[in-house]
Every structure is written in C-alpha cells, then in structure tokens.
Amino acid sequence: MVIVALKPIYGNNDSKIDSIVRNVESDSLKVHLLLKEASAITWSDVHTAQAYLIKALDIAEKINYSKGIAYSKFELSKFYSGYDFELSEKFILEALTHANEARDSLLIAKIYCSIGVLKYDSKVYNEAEDFYHKALKILLRNGQDSIAAQVYNNLGVTFDKIYHYSIPNLFYDKAIKINKANNNYLCLATNYINLAEGLHTSGKYQEAEEYLKESYVLVKENNFSRLLPWIYNSYCDIFASQDKNDLAIIYADSALHQSKLHLNLIQELEALKRLHESYYKKNDLNNAYIFFKLYCSVNDSIKENHQLKQMDVFELKLKYSEELKQQQLDKALLKNQIYKKKITNIWIILLSSFIILILLLAFTFQRARLKRKTLEKKNIQLENEKINSKLEYKNKELTTNVMYLLKKNEFIASVSNQLKTIINEDEKSRKNAFNKILHELSRSICWLL
Image 1: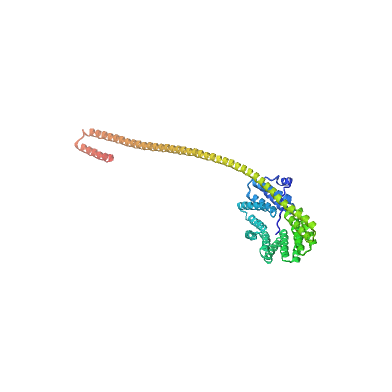
Image 2 (image 1 turned 60 degrees about the vertical axis):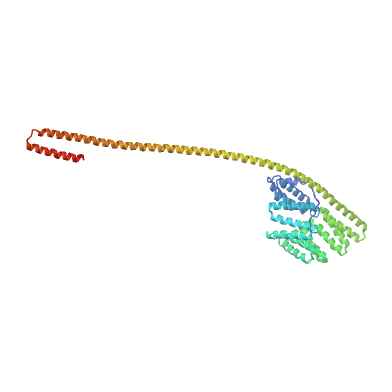
C-alpha cells in the first residue's frame, strides 16, 4: 500500500502563514484557509504544508473548534503514518473524537480509512478490513464515490495480504474505474502502483512494469513527485526478482534520491535495504556493507526523531494544558459575569414588575374612585330630579286647591248675594229663585267632583 511517511518538519514558514491569516478576522476561517492551503501543496511543498497544519491546529485548539482540530489532526496523522506509529495513532484517534463531536460523517469515514492503514501497517489485516468497510459504508451512503475509490484500493492491498491476487484485483478494478471517471489521477497512479505490486507477487513481471509505466506517466504529468520513491522501489523489486541486479541497483538508487528529496524516511529505508541486498547478491560486499551501515543509521535516526518528537508532543501538551487552564479560567469568569448579569436582570424584572403592579393598583383605585364619584353625582342628580318632580306636583296640587277654594268662595258669595235679594220678593219669585240656586248648587257640586 502506498502510505506517505514523512519526517516531522518544523520549518520557518511564519511569513507565509502570516501573509494568509493577517487580514482574516475570524479564527475559524483562518483554520479553514490554512487547511485548504496545506491540502493544495501537500504533494509539492512538504515543509510549508506541515507548517500550515501545525498552525491550523494551534488556532483551532485555542478557540476549541472541534471541526478544525479534527481536520488538522487527521491531516497531521497522515504525515507520521509509517514513520511514527504511536504519534500517528494518537493524532488519528483524537481526530476521530473531535469528528464525532462535530458530527462530520465524511471526515469520520476518512478517519476510519486511516485507522485501517495503521492496522495494515501493524499487520492486523482483518481489523484493517473492518475499518475499510466501515469507511466504505459511510462514503457510499453519502454518494462519495471518488473517496470510496481510495478505500477500494486499500481493500485490494489488504486482501492481497489475506487472500490471493484475484480477489484484490476486483477492488483495484472498482477503484480504477471510479478514479478514471472522476479524473482523480493521484489515486489512479496509486492504484497502478498497488496493482503492479500484486502482479509482481504473482510473477507477472511484464504486466507489473506496464502498470508502473502508466503510474510514472501520471506522476510526471501531474507533478506527483512524492510517489516516485514507491515507483522506483517497485521497479527495483521486479528486477531483483529476475536477478537483474544492475537495473535493481539503478532504480533503488533513484528511489533513495527521491526519498531524501521528499524526506520520506520509510521509502529511504526500503531503498537502502534493497541496495544492500542487490550489492550482496553481486558479491560486492564493500558497497553492501556501506548501505547496511546507512540503513542502520537511518533506522536509528527514525528512533531518535521519535524520541525528539515525543518531547515536542510533551511540550505541546504542556502548552495546551496551560492554555486549557487559562481558557477554563476565562470561561469561569465569563460564566460568573453572565450569572451576575442574569441576577441583575432578574432583580430589574422583579422591580419593574412591582412598579408596574403598584401603578396598575393605583390606576384601578383611581378609576374606581372616579366611577364612584360619577355614580354619586348621578344619584344626587336623580334625587334632585325626583325632588323637583315632587315639588312641581305639589305646586300643581296647591294651585288646584287654591283655585278650588277661590271658586268655592266665589260660589258661596254668589249664593249669599242671591239669598239676600230674594228675601223681599213674593212667594212665587222666591220659589223660582230657590230653584235657580238649587240648580246652580247641583251644577257646582258636579263641577267640584
């Protein structure tokens, strides 16, 4: 399997990094920009790519941005796969934790694939297969055929170790078909290299060379020069298997040169091993000894760099721990400020509610008072109207009585005067006069009634 294994680099790329993030206000956007730049140059400028990723991780951890941390650690884990297993495993498992927090299913699938690579490197092929299938299930469910092609490729390599060549060939065919359809030339070149290795294992040297040629053309056309160490080492294996030691030495030497150029210690180690074996087969013990010493030196260098890296990781952990404590303190202070603000707001709300309640009660009382006064005024007005009505009625009754008395007095006076006049008259006249008076009395009684 083609696995990028690189020596950790801490080059001085501050000016480049600063030029990218200087005018960006959002920290999360800075992380995305750095990740994007690292992805764009990872196959052409290893130093800057790794510096971008380290800076992206630093910013993401400061703002506790789970998605940024996950992607940064995922990409960094690929730099150390094959070179520093423990560090690569640490980064990839931490990336998986943050990817689950961010609920990024696509990244989770990629991480499963990378864990599969680590399991493959540890020769735990069945577990590697399980992780590849987990990744494949997520990718196919989300329609990510282009990325799924990489998983098919890795399944092919894994099955090549577990079973025989015909089964992994099915996975390679799927991967090649998808990568051709999507013009994914980097993965296609990788597919060809892995197919060539499988054919070489089966003794089909001519076919293996054809696939390596196709891979070499894609690498040259698309500037995938970091794949050259694998291609040259594969050529070396093919010629060494045919006892063409001179050609094997030429390609192993080219693989060594490219590995040093791209700081690929694993392939450098493989190239030195092949040079030692090829010279030994030629009975050139002097050169065989020289390359064996170089092999041991590089192997020791890997172990030494691993120890240095562990110190760097410890320093990074210490720095992160201090920053985390500061963040926790800042969070506690902010939480306390928010709590105080909430309490203040609650008191303001309660006081405002009390004032509003008092105002409502005062308004209700005043309104009831005005209503009572209005009602009292209406009652007084009604009483006055009632009294006035009674007075008017009494006045009318009094006037009627007065008129009655006046009329009565007037009638009595009239009768008295008539009686006075008939005293001296004769009997007949008095009789007529009395009848007239009686008639008037009867009429007056009827009128009074």
